Image 1: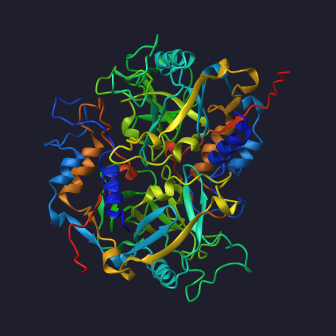
Image 2 (image 1 turned 135 degrees about the vertical axis):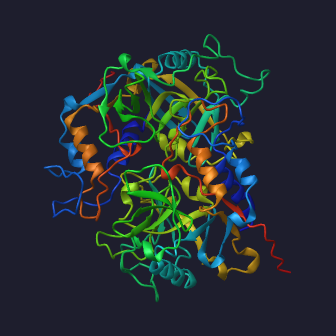
Image 3 (image 1 turned 60 degrees about the vertical axis):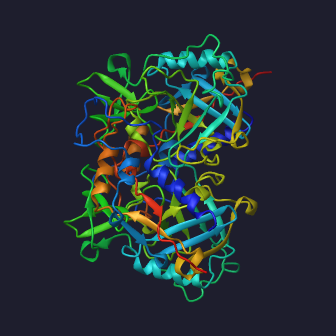
Length: 320
Length: 320
């Protein structure tokens, strides 16, 4: 966790400053919707109000230590409560400690878990954790307190937007809401049966959003720090990128619930509230890039191109 | 080029077999469009007709040798003829030899060129190649011979589909067509001015498709083999992923026009024609995943989720 601040800067800037070019307020090319005031993403974040940020509770995070670095996940507690509870049981029992990153498939996912999962004689015990769980592919809209609509249409869902800090799809008629498979989303691998997932096998999206997986997998978390620890792992052999040779795997030292760590090591992140004015401005600034570099603003943004800014909490915790 | 066949298998299977699950013809869940005959992507390719594949001419490729492996690009000659011509001039003069991968930004791009590009006293000479070129962000529809419409709508363009082997957007009213920034697309970096690109700085998309760049950059190629050589490069420091330290860079040994290589080393790939019946079946099979693993087919696919299958040519060239 030593490099958490540095890692966070990477997360934040990668999300919000992808484009190299200084913006200006020169005359604008034709655009579908031009905001009254033109600010860059960085400026919008810089001028945001502290109340527009929500603290990510350490008990709603997992901290994964690997041989290549630290990854921090925010858990999807509202969407997949049973999986999240099971993950905490596994983390607290040290289930993941000594397991490994077992798969890296280009433009798709990086996966981790027990390399011996298929071998009953060698497989690590799940202890008191459950081996299978009811599917949590979607949640009832009535169970979720927030939803911020993205104005642009999406063919994968009747509505798309943001809820609980996640990019989501929603179907009001069916009364359902679900996290979308955007870059950084973490899902619970499963077999053919809907209820065969447990959280023991996890994967993160590291390519173009495979939205066809939406509503087919329980999304249990999203990476809020250290995704590059996972995304640059050497790709495994085709077709699915599993590492056949043990030496290709990256060891997982431990996965802990953030709040179980010593206070000084607990992840202290904040996420920009998706119901805030600054988030709305950020979405609009990304829908129409108005700096001089862009000759033709898109006038549109797809769900998985919207950044979800995260920063290190300004709260300094004195642990001495 | 020794591992070309192995690399190709990776490309082909990564494109066409992302899902681990055997398909079957069990009763199907509700889906928007269900084809009369249900075949998996792999089966569709296996039963394709040889005439449905087009040879990728070696003279329309670049072969990039790096310290980490070989990358093969198919050039976008129809969309960016001036850039492609300039790239060939540079390749033939050995311009790229000894340059480097200079940038890796997570969920965005990997870029290569002259690390000293900003320093006039150290910068490598472009020789007879042009330092700036007219923008080739779009091409006239009238100049392009083919277009295969994707049935699903896309907010980034009036129409989307496939042309010349590339994923493209099209605006019939404006008479314009352009390659889209899907994973693996290669663009010519430029400065603020539209005409400041030359091909000396190239980048490849290695994250969720940054479609906001469409019509703002000249796309000059797409990676058809070895993209994982680029996509797993260690990310550079934020905000933009440029390597400040030379030791983080990956050396480029050479970039050659494929047809300039000895016959035995020339890239010999074929691409599935996007106007073929097999391609149409493949698109439909991906719009609605009908194997038993999928509980809810999407009934939709976005442009950059459509695979563009490439395989090693079956033509054996005897060079002895």
